[in-house]
Image (cartoon, rainbow, N blue to C red; front, side, top):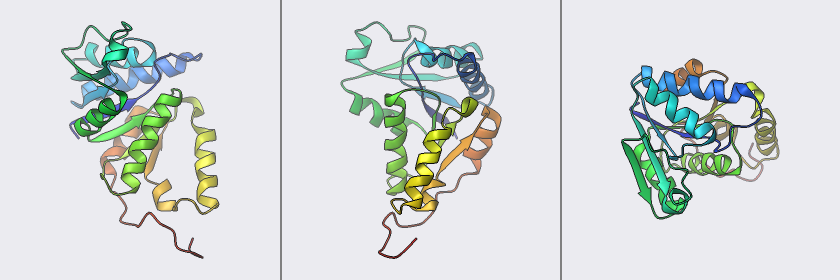
Length: 193
């Protein structure tokens, strides 16, 4: 695993453990020689992640749309900041550069990015692992809803299990390394569970 794409908040949230876990992940990636791909911002958890990885000697690639760059939130300390024209281009480039995807606490942008790459995995467009770093139970309610989706017959359990979950960076990286994509059709037949 050469690079991991991390989706996370451009705000820091209210709880200090969000930033602490973000810094721990950035440091762990650098120490393990895994490059970071992220949205290129200097603010919120995004900035904390990049700063931690850089401080630990890590490789950091930021991908930022020109419109966000012009709002002066781009990280000025990156040797590799790629400027693209749109959010669509940003997500495509980040996906191309990464060998795995991780979401940390964040808002609707974080969730949208995670759900898109997870959908691509479910459809077989890639076999890269998708994961949540579930800091302080941040994603517990989301995971409960995803289990509800399975229970209602809109997703196979195998596809739900494609979303790896851990509550600390060490366990998360171990799960990402051990991941093997399931070989199961996306569509559920009538009467099938």
